[in-house]
Length: 353
Image (tube, rainbow, N blue to C red; front, side, top):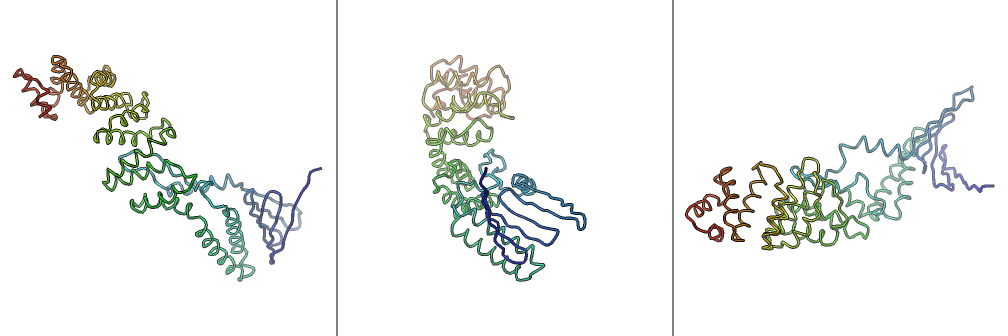
């Protein structure tokens, strides 16, 4: 025989606090109509007078959550900056692991406040009690749920383009031992929007050196990876750039020709390492059989020309430079390079100048 535990405490005016094995619930109402709020969700029962017929309707927490998310979808934190592909790092709700240990008690306090307000029609003092309970819950949560509060502030600040405040909120949340390290990507994006590229690069370095394994092949992570690679190449940190470039997948993602970009970026890394043969191989893999000369194809041919020149293979270099010049005679130093080639000079001298 199964054991059952249940205790019901009267709070007055038809309001009852129910303690059971499944948790705490609150119920109230008048004869023929009752509303209960508990761990399973919201339950409403109505009895038709004189018939003995009772109609019961339940709404589970899962359904209630789904309806709330659908209703507030447009108001959910926006984590995508126009023109970039930062992933949706923030969830619509604060992760459970970031909430305080008093969260469930505070939620029950909130439910009790709502029930007091709903039944205040029968006793006006219950409206005051409900208001006091709500204020008490908010003050209590503000004292104990700093991480959860700042987590919500991240989305609000980012959406309002208050990037300095967003960075401060991210730093507070990251102090929590169970915070998602991917928030660092959002922090770097804030620095980029503030034109603080050096600070953004430091954050990217910190993330990709310690948390690269947390990223999957989703298209949303393409942008921070490419940002990191390009900044690392610019700062002369080609080994680090190459490590990140290796994590780019070969197949296309959405509208991104990932094979092209991966080969191109790896080629730039090898150029920085002065491994010109490896660079040429990567550039060829990027181009494939395509004849287009749009970016980054045109720069791929240009960089291949430089690599061939560095290896002393001037005839092969000339073919690449001619393709670039015929496509865009104003591209970088291509005009000076072609003048040097036509004059019988080494194009490497032009590049060094």
